[in-house]
Amino acid sequence: MQSINSNYFQIFNIPESCELDLESLAEEYRKQQSEVHPDRFANADESAKLRAVQMSSYLNEAYETLKSPLKRAAYLLTLHGTDVERVRQSDLSMDLLMEQIKLREKLDEMPKDESVLADLENLRTEVQSKLNRQLQQFSEKFELEEFDAAKRIYHEMQFLYKLLTEIDAGEELRLGY
Image (cartoon, rainbow, N blue to C red):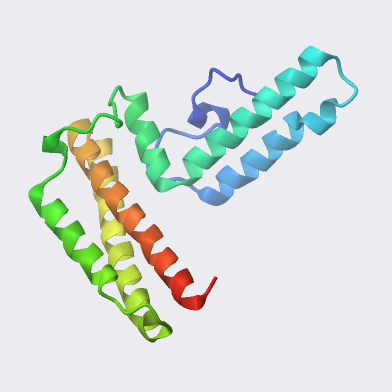
């Protein structure tokens, strides 16, 4: 079992990388979670119980971060000294902002009934395709240690993830979920 001070990649014994084998990550997570799960320490002293709760929580946080491409990208940048929370105007291009406005308008202008479900799926496919390209570009810039460029791409990915969430919400609204 790794320590709470280990970085997330070290915890799961995997190299720091943008692209992960998610099945291997999940397998290692389950293995380690079974070792530190608080239920295993029900009869232990209070310090061991507390340590199990802390480690289990830390493993959950690490796993959730690494399995999400967006969270993983932010984490990788943070590991390399890049503050992803601080956004400068230069981090967002006018083309990106205009494209986001156009895509959001497209979503907002769709009728609020089931007749647009196919259109929503087409929009989701379009946005997912853009996101896949951005993920590839992020990986390339990160591997080249071009962290400022990777940070700009990360912020573009944030917009796309948010838009995908809005598309899903629009679909659920139309389906009455």
